[in-house]
Each structure stands twice: as structure tokens, then as C-alpha cells.
Length: 516
Image (cartoon, rainbow, N blue to C red):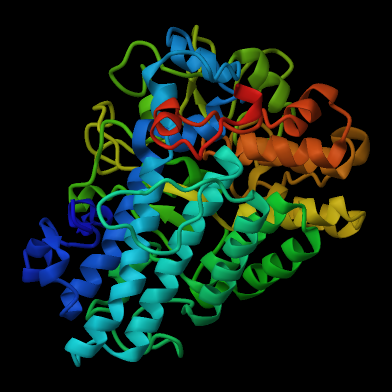
């Protein structure tokens, strides 16, 4: 098959809006390169294709949550044996889901589409006077970021992976694996280069993106595209994975100083967990996210946390695929003023922002529950929540983690308390109350060492957002006390096995040693 851009995967139908302009009609076709890269519309369709492939890679087989939340995480599974195997880290088990998630092909679709875009986009600049130098520069920065993000994602899943920066014509010839450390250096350089070019916002006459971006107003792009602070936020994540905590502080400082310029803010517990709140649609509060926007006919029965975790009485499904056991909930959410979930000494549950049906056989993890348009027919199982990769709370707790790892505990505690102020807000009856003056600051006697309290806060705050497994890896590297997990890190057991289909096709690939 010739090199093509798969425009049928256009980002969210993104931002196609309700009207069927020529651009929107074209975006449903598969366009051969020979007749492509001529117009402004081709450029827009090409970049949206890279976004769409990224969203598809994360959503496929619910991979984003299985990689980050289900594997060795908070969740158990009532009946699905494939998920039980993943929970136990038995990744050699013979199940279709494990086989599919062991294959990196969908991430290389992102890489190849990005490489094609970067190679061919100057042709649009040469052929269409409407496509300005600034438009091209901003487009290139976004695509370079998305390619780098795909590599960062793969390195966390498989470790060393093949490294390609030029497009492939029809097939991926055999290529061996490149050191994960070298790839992460590339990722960091690409994201930093992108950050220097990207605007804080689109279509608001930002100095780095003047005028209307692709002739659309800001509301079309809010929370949907890669922005300057997206790049710096993910640079902080990359640096944390590398253990470069001085860099984590440097990059997170930029985000936490400049977020008002991006019209961003922290979010309340109520907004975070309501059906038409934080996870609904595309929002500026999403530092990096990929949306399934109901208004663009992007809702889906799978590829979201809800399809794994929701059940009756929230939706018309008898048993959830995954749930957090009661003992785990009570171990994690021990503070009685926690607005996400708390239970008093008599066993009465009060705030249940994260969980429904706690007293039933399977507590339903209902923090994320965007059914249809977020308001109508709340039990019908079609979902439109965004895949949120990062938000301000993530960057704040990453900086806290970095300070704690470097022994700067006062700064670490200050950042931890920034998030605690948002979440420990119940009234004297234990009910969630955003205006209640019940904030209780971190206390070592109650909450333990700063690094322990920070990672526990991350466990609570980002439950169901695909972060927990990676957090565990970083936590155990810092603590260095859990011999079993350290052995998993040192022997490569934190990575997934490489698909046997890929190894059979490419003799230059070798299996991760832990899974041989």
C-alpha cells in the first residue's frame, strides 16, 4: 500500500462541527499522496490525521487504562480472565487482548504519519499562498510533539524500540531496537523544540500564532490541540521517568507559572467527577487530552474507562469488568475529610464522588461517567469522555515528587498542600462541600514521609486516568525498599513482552529478556 494519510481517523471528527464544508467531506476519504499536499485543506487534514491516529492508539482495546491502571494496580476483575492475568502481570498468558496490547504497530502508524507530514508539508507552503510560514511552523511543532509522545509512550511500555524518523513506503523493513535512553533524549529535544514554537492558545492573536488558526475561532480548538504548556508539561513527565528531577522542576515551573496565559485552572472535586464536567468534551483544563466529543458524533462503546468500570446502578450493565475492592478503597481513602470518598467510624459512607454502590458486592468506580452528551439518558452505555493524559494537578504533584526526591521537603509539602486544598473539602456531616473550611494540611505523623504522601495523593487523584503503574515504577526507584518491585525493574519486568507476531516477521527483534 502506498504511503497514505488515513483521514478516516481524523481527530474527534474534530472539530468538524455541524456543517459539511468541503474540508469536512474530504476528511472522510483516504487520499493518495500523488494528489495530496497541495492545499491548506490538505495540511489541516494531514495534521488532524496524526491526532486521530494518536487517539486511536491509546483507545484501542482500552490500552491506555489497561497499561496504566489495570496492570498491577488498584483494580480487580470479577469475571474477565484476561484482565486477571494482566492484573497479576502474567503477560505471557494467551488472551487476544494481551496479544493485541503487546503489538506496537498502532504507535508506528502515528510515527509514520508524522514522518510523512514532516517530509511533505513544505509542498503545501510552495503550492498554496494561503498556507503561511507561521501556520506551517505551528503545524510542524504539533506533529513533532505527537511523534515524540508516541515514542515516549512506547518506551514506557516496551523499553528499547525501533527508531524511525523517515517515512516507509508501504512496509516497515526490518529494523532493530534502539536504546530507550537514546530515544528519550530525542523525545526531550523534540518536545523542547516544539515548546519554543507553540502558542499558549489558538486563534486569539497569540504572538506565536496570530489570527485565526485554519480560519476557526478559539472555541473550536480549546483543549484540543498541543499548546506550549502541553509540551512543557510532558517534558516534566519525561524527565520524571528518566529520574532527572532538576529538569522536572524546571519544566513544571514554567507550567505552574504560566498556566493563566493558557486560560487554564485547577478543578474542583465536583467538576472533576460530574457527568458533564471535567472529562466531558474538550476543555482548557486538559493539558493534554484526546476527546470523544458527543457533538461531533465521536461517542464510543469502548476505548474509555467507563466501558471497563461502570455497571449498575450507573449504567445498564450487571457487573463491571474491573472494580476497586472495598478493602483497597478503605486503605487508600483513609482521611475522613477527603471529598473524593470518605467513610466515618460507624461505617457510613458520605462523599462518594469516586465510587457508587460501595455497600454492594462490587463498588462501582464512577469518577469518570460521561454517558452520551453528559446529561440525557444517563444509563445508556455509549460514552464520550476524553482521554486525559495530563492536567495541572499532575504537574503540581510531579514537582512535589521532584522536590521530595531531591530532599527539598518544604517545597514538596507546599505543592502537596496545593492539591489537598482542592480535595479535602467536606462539611461537618462528611458531605462534599466545596466551600467548607475543612482543609487539613499535610502532617507527617498522620500522612507519613513527604514522598509517601505525594504518591498516595497521586494514587487517589489520578485513579482511572492511566498513570498508576508508571507512578509505581518511579516511586519504587525513589524508595528503593521493595525488593520484589526493584527486581521487576532491574530485570525488565516493568515492560510488556513484544508481540510474537512482530518477532516472527522481523529477525532483528529480540524479546524482552524477562518474558523469554
